[in-house]
Length: 154
Image 1 (tube, helix red, strand yellow):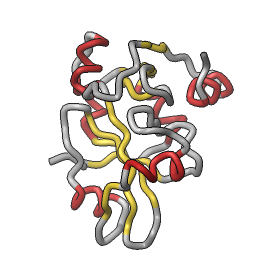
Image 2 (cartoon, one colour; image 1 turned 45 degrees about the vertical axis):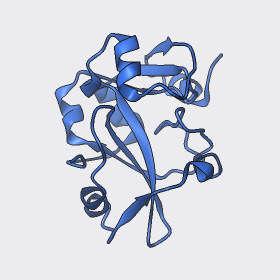
Image 3 (cartoon, helix red, strand yellow; image 1 turned 180 degrees about the vertical axis):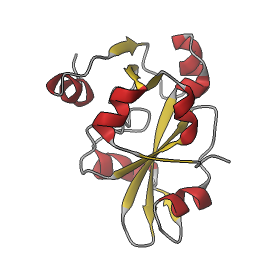
């Protein structure tokens, strides 16, 4: 079944591959990278934060890394940012935990991806539902999302 992510990529004539696996919200990003038989440094998770200014921001980091909130805040010119509670994720993004994608967010939040993405020809991230990942050429991802590229991991 096509997700909004796939429909948006199709509409923009961007080629991608979809990888589906048994949906399980207990799987970690490292587990998913292992299922995909991929380097975790090429598999990104999308994390949503809220700043004191009440603005929301999306950050993408490799699944085996943690978001550094101080670096993240600096990257978006905020004093600080905090992770939003899981219970607010669907309302804010249109996605559930484990299925959050930088493409097709409810509103066009600014996306920042860790600069380590530049070491990959392709990246993987959620296809917009638990149990599905998309693989995109990095150059296509950068065109469609137009993210900031910053050092945002610990």
